[in-house]
Image (cartoon, rainbow, N blue to C red; front, side):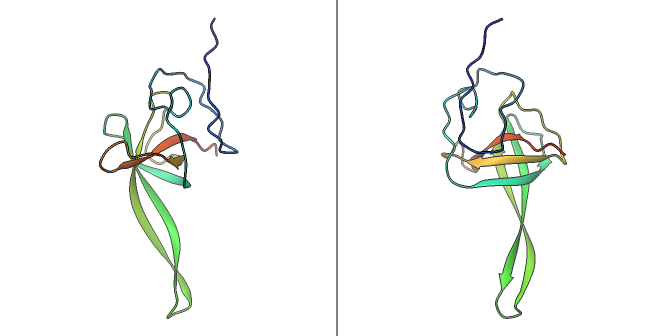
Amino acid sequence: MESVKVRNVGIPGVKPPEDTCSDPLCPWHGSLPVRGMVFTVKVEKVKAHKMIVVSHEYLHFVKKYMRYEKRRRKKHAYLPPCIKVQPGDLVVIGETRPLAKSVSFVVLGKVER
């Protein structure tokens, strides 16, 4: 059995996936660099080819009322073939260079519950 080289993405607490792939856009087995923001988000849809829609929920402070309000933003993220997710899962996504018109994030791993 030959060992497959797994890159270090540089984000603490995120483990590489069990499966392997030969995708050049995989942050673990390819050469795609991850930089910038890292989010833990919920998966909304997994219908497109190698792409998922995630929902990022955050709190925004309203100065006038001195309170926080919940906001939600949908983002598109690239899904490498070595990571298996379903709608409702919590995943960690990291920012990368633009891969398509609306895709600037890549899935780094699934959060274990």
